[in-house]
Amino acid sequence: MPARSLQRFAPWLWLTPAAALLIPFFVIPLLLTFRNSFYSDDPMGMLIPGFTLANYSKIVRDPYYLGVFENTVWAALLVCLVSIVMSYPLSWVLARAKGSGRAFLLWTVYLPIYVSVIMRVFGWIFLLSDGGLFNQALIHLGATTHPLQMMNSFPGMMVGLVHRYLPLMVLPLATSLRKIDDAILRAATGLGGNRWFVWSRIVFPMSLPGAVVGLQLVFAGVLSDYVIPSLMGSPHFQMLAPAIYYEGITNASWALSGAIASAVIAIVALFLLSANLLVRRVAPWASL
Amino acid sequence: MTRDDISFQTSRSLPARFAAAVVVLFLSGPIAIAAVIAFSSGDRLEFPIPGFSLRWFAVALTKQQYIDGLRASVIIGLANALLATLAGTGAAIAIHRYRFRGRAFLQAFVMLPVALPAIVLGLGLLYALSSYNMRPGLLAATLGHAVIGVPYVFAMVSAALANYDNSLERASLGLGASPIRTFLLVTFPLIRDGVIAGGITSFLFSFDNFSLSLFVTRGDTLPLRLMQQLLSYADPSIAAISTILILLPLGGMLFLLPRIVRGRI
Image (cartoon, rainbow over all chains, first blue to last red; front, side):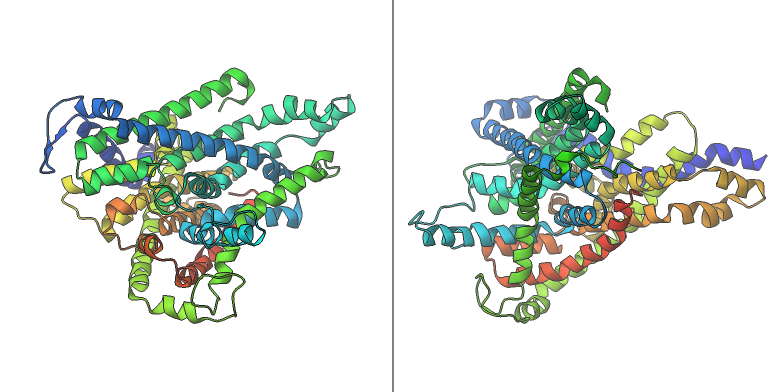
């Protein structure tokens, strides 16, 4: 029967466009990155086939590359921490809101996701630059005589990164918090649990799956962010994405950049894996 | 759902609401200020603005570099949305409508581009393009951006597919409609919202992409041009062009948000 044989091939037929796109432009680029990391660069910018671990030993030994990795992981963890703390109140109110209040809050969370990052940075330049609104206010109030340097500094970059990635934490967290039935919370309070008990024994554990998804999105986002470090960051605090761009394009060191990129994949994989393991350990009911 | 009848007390607790309001202000303040400055009549960045005018919109819309960038970004965005929608929808239908070996693996695989740092994929594409003898440009950027769009389309179409009963399809096939007719008249209308939402999302993400565009374009998309401009000098024309560009996300969100609020996608 033709219908039956069609039925067997149908899923593969539906998968063809995805395969035609993802194999040459996703799988092969990753394989090439991994392969290049074992090749070597010659001074003319040519890639020399071979097998060497020299690129990896360079990124582990050279203080410059080691510093770039340290800076970026440190910044990513800090952004994760700040955004999870900032997310809980908003996610909680968002999860419990209804009707127009909920619609309004969803707009304020989704708008920054869809508005160009350029416009957001523009807003921050206006607020944080030497002649910006905050410095004017500080000088006017007599809190300082010289403008504080906030743009192109580590704190300025942190503000920009948190602003960019906070919505990615708020949304999964709100989804988790919304699943908590009010009846459970009423029961806990009714049976004499105080606020801290309800928060630490019910709300926080039940929100963990969303929090972990949020952490993963924020961490991976910061690791590959080029715009915010270039526009708001300090020239003395090198981040990974600009460093990869510099090695790959400006320096044409394809082997070295391949090794850096492979190390980034390893870091992200390690983070995803350990976050999942941790959740499975401390909150087995929430395993993803 | 009746859980809304009596809201739990802490949802009304003042500290939580106050903290949430501060975070909302943090999220929307810089965007609102940038939008106001776009209408400034002044020569430089100042707030409050000296007066309302559309002069910076006129400046923005006559800058050749912005217009060229806008054209490149729109072409890449639309073509990318088409490709990503086709690939993502196909994959979602294959995985949710059929039972075959390797389904779970394929599902994880299709979602993988979300987890991969975009800068790594960009670098990999730089290597791959040179082995394919392709140059960075509109085509390369379209294909690269579409890879990132696939998981979003896949997730949204999957959500739409999960919401309906596939006995409708079986009824259509059983009553003698061809598979193609069944898809066009039964399946597609049911998942249309998910498909459109996925397409809009991948357009918007492509429209604001940096990490891939750095490697697969010649620096001529609008975001990259605006970034160059911001690195040298921030004048209100950047706010003006960004405000014009907000209209695109707003249009998209008018479609997406009511469906998100209702939990459909």
